[in-house]
Amino acid sequence: MTDSEFTVTVAKDLEDLIPVFFTNRKKEVETLRSALAAGDFNQLKQLGHRMKGVGRSYGFIKVSDIGKTVEDAAATADRGVIEACIGEYADYLQKVKVVYE
Image (cartoon, rainbow, N blue to C red; front, side, top):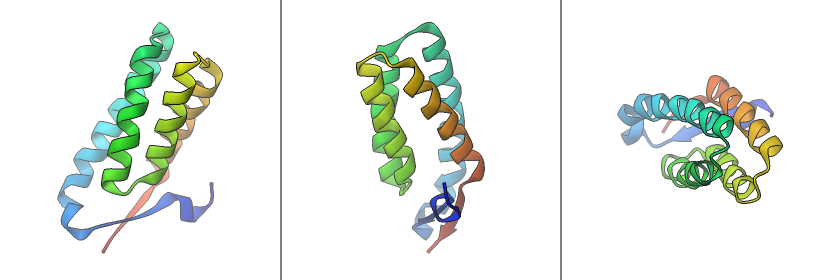
């Protein structure tokens, strides 16, 4: 990923919500890991679907893109893809910078 992929512009009126958004996303990484360890592809599919919606709602398109990949991979029980997505997601959450407009 390039630096521009780690910078997200968010509406100023959402500024108060972003810390909670990130807290929830970091918990989600752990939930994804647990679901993968348990082989719970149904839960992984649901989590991926939720990521798609919440990412777009807050302007974090990368979260939505990763969510779509998780959802699709869960439908075919593709552990390797899901594991790679979880790693990418955790990395993204650590590096993303938010700019408010």
